[in-house]
Image 1 (tube, rainbow, N blue to C red):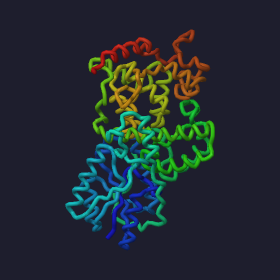
Image 2 (cartoon, one colour):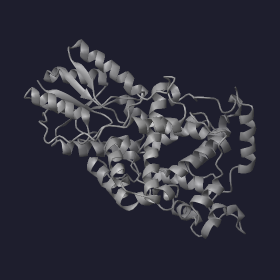
Image 3 (cartoon, rainbow, N blue to C red):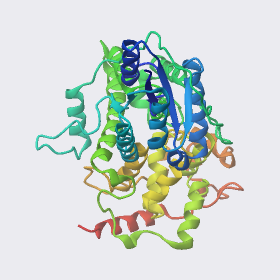
Image 4 (tube, one colour):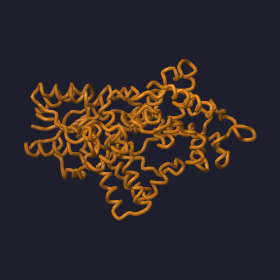
Amino acid sequence: MPTICWFRRDLRLGDHPALLAAVAQARADDDEVVALYVVDPVLQHSAGAPRLAYLAASLRALDEATGGRLVVRHGRADHVVPEAAREVGATSVHVSAATEPYGRRRDDAVAAALAAGGAALVRTGSPYAVAPGRLRTGQDGPYQVFTPFRRAWLDHGWHAPAPRPGSVPWATLPSDGVPDAPPTDVRLPDAGEHAAHARWRAFLRDDLDGYDVDRDRPDLDVTSRMSVHLKHGEIHPRTMLADLAAAGTGATGRAAESVATYRSELAWREFHADVLWHSPDATRRSLRPAVPDDAWATGAAADDALTAWTEGRTGYPLVDAGMRQLRAEGWMHNRVRMVVASFLVKDLHIPWQRGADHFMAWLVDGDVPQNQLNWQWVAGTGRDAAPYFRIFNPVTQGRRFDPDGAYVRRWLPELRGVPGAAVHEPWRLPDGPPPGYPDPMVDHAHEREVALADHARRPT
């Protein structure tokens, strides 16, 4: 009887333990593997057009890699997966374990439905180097702070990348076909496993050595941009960690620091997944209070402020450049993500959840644990050991990380005639901001004091 490999956040054939398990069973049974992807209406509804368009391209790449045998079915997974198992007489469905709240509930429901028909859901591996929930403190609790988590993560280590199956006896089944990509003006990167590895090799070759210093510079565009490939599982972090280990062998100075820094960025990704594992309601609920409830802006004025922020019309160039990059590319440089998030929460006093929702609607790499927990980190509501209330100054950040203003001018055509660092404070120009660019919508210094005062009266 055939076995089923159910693809989800693992749209690749290499370094895929669940696929290897499915292939091994199929070969033992002298049978075939069904490559199944379920178009889940819940997940489709929660994703914006850029991410759905990218997903369609990634699925097309996976279909090509399977020789056109990817079986796409639409509907609730707890209906579709057992139905597919009955259709081919499969007794097992192999998957990479889901770790986010919805996925865990979905898989439990699928497992129960399969068991009722005499089949099993076999979970092998996860989208992470170290599965969320595995690391525990000396007091047998979850880690609350990143640095000790990273130490434990490094000490624990991870498996070597799983080998790519030499050949797979793919089954042929009726398929609904890869869903059409929704229309979007966002410029999408190349999708699929091949594109992920090509992008990663280019980063290792061209930009890794300077990553420790240059990663905060949006004007240089030298970050790896691997977040979208990790989100869709077109490459596994275990593969990247193995390549980093090879790159770090014998490295010294800046090169060694860059390897360690990039490895720490992957550790942050795994920390956020671990936090969400232990606190699944962190997708919407603040993990700790930062300010009292009456500190948040509400009503029509707050809605208008949110709209200005989403459209890149705040009058603060680094913020506006970031928001317009998001609209154009479905991606934003990480340093700028922190600045625009801080501006929304600390300057406009709008709850982080509203900003997180906007990001998830536009980000091609929108990933629940990373998006929600990064927003909570900026808002001061997350697992954060900082002894102060973090507030980013958009002008200072611009002058430091976009020193000549190249990033701002790239995304704000209204300011392309403003030379050098003066572009970060166009209201100080002799004639004020150029035509078409707004004055600052708020006074950052004043709003910073308001935010600090609100923080001082936070609930204890």
